[in-house]
Amino acid sequence: MGIFDRFRKNVEERKNIKKLTNTFKMINGYSPIFTSYNGGLYEMGLTRTCIDKIANQCSKLHPVINGNKNYNRINAILQNKPNRLMTTQQFIYRLVTILTVENNAYIVPIYDNDLNMNVVGFYPVRASGSKIVTVDNIDYLVYKIQQEEYVIEYDLVGSLKRHYYKKEYVGETNNAIDSTMDLIDTQEQGIKEGIKSGAMIRFLARLGIVQNDESIKKEQKRLKEEQLSMENNGGILIFDNKYSEIQKVDSKPFIVDKEQMDLIKNNVFDYFHMSEAILQNTATEDQWNLFYEDVIEPIAIQISQVLTNMIIKQSDIERGLNVVLESTKLQFISNNTKLNVSQQLFDRGILSTNQVMDIWNLPHVPDAEDKRYIRKEYTEVNNLDKDVVDNNSNKEDDSDGASTSNGKKEDKD
Image (cartoon, rainbow, N blue to C red; front, top):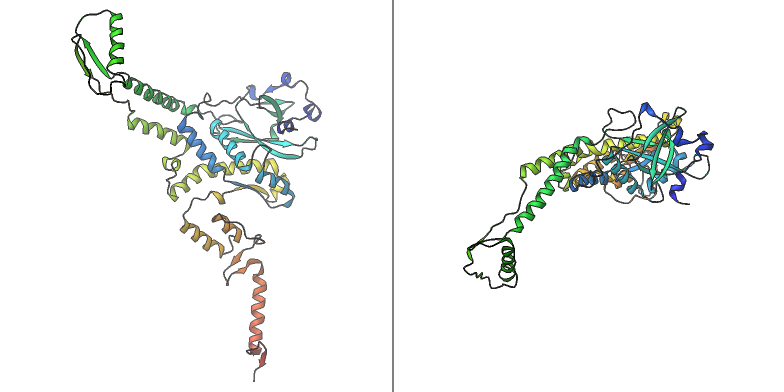
C-alpha cells in the first residue's frame, strides 16, 4: 500500500459526515485559500538562495522527545524516517521551504489502516491549494497531495505560520515583496536585452549613391558575407566607391547600476533576515550567531511546539514532556570556542560526555549514556555522596594506622 493511501480516513464512519463537498460551511464567512507569489518567489535565483540557506540550516536540527520511554516509537520515527519518502533532514528541509515560500505549512499525521488513530509517520503539506472548512462546528483541513484531495480534523494537524497577523488560521501573503520581485525580473530582462542590443551592430557603412530598400538589403548581405565574415581572416576591409565611409562601432554591454543592484539585494535580504555573508559562507562567528537567533531559532521553537501538541498527551505535557529540536549539529563556532565551551560546561556537570562529542561532531562513546562529571578529579555526579562517604572513611582509617609498603596498616604507638 502506498504512502498516500494512509492519509485516507473513513470520514463517514468516524464523524458521520455526509456529502462533504456539499455541506462544508466556510469559517467566518470566507474560505482561506493560500497561494504563493504567482509561483515566482521560489523561481528567482536570489530569493531561492535565501530560502535554501534557511531550509538547509534548519534541516540540521535534531528532533527529540524528552522525558518518557512510552514515546520511543514516535521518537524513532521523528529522528530517522518520518515517512516512506523522506529522511528527517529532507522532511524538515521541505517543511521549512514550504513555510518560507508560502508563509504557511502543515504537518499531517499518517495513520495505519485501522481506526485506532495509530500514528505511523508525518508528512509536510503545502498550504497552497488547501482550505479550512467547518462541519457541525468541527474544523477540517482540506488539502491536496498529488492532485488528490484529503480531509482531516484541523486539531490533529500541525499548523506553522509566518507573518501571523490579520487572520486566525493563516499567516499573511508575500505581497510585501512583490515590488522587489518585479524589480528583479525587470533588472534581469534589462541586462539580457541590453547585451543583445550591444552585440547587434558592429559596423556602420554609408553608401555614396542612392539605392532603393531592396538594393540596400542585398548590399548589406554581400558586405557581411564577403568582408565581415570569419573567412576574412586577413584583417583587411576593402570597399569600392559605392561606400563613402565605413566606421567600426564600439559597443559596450549594458550594466545595471551597482547602487540599484545593491538596493534590490538589500530589500530581499531584509525580507528574509539574511545577509550576503551568510549566503556566501563568509560570515563571522558573531554574524552567524545573530542569524541563528533571528531566523533559525524561532522556526525551531515553532516546530517543536507544534510537534509537542500533535504527539504528546496533555497530561504528559503538564508533567514536562515535550519535543525539542536540538541544534548541536548546527553550531557555527570556532575550535577555540568549542574547546572553551566543552571544558567549562563538562567539568561542571552541565554537559555529558556524548554531548561534548556532538559539539565536535565525533561519534558517541559506547555505554556513556547520560553520565556527567564534576571537578573533584572528575567524579560522576551520581556518585558524589558515595565518594564523600568513602573519603571520610579513608580519613578515619588513616588516623587509626599508617599504610605499609605492602598495603597493610600498622598500629600507632
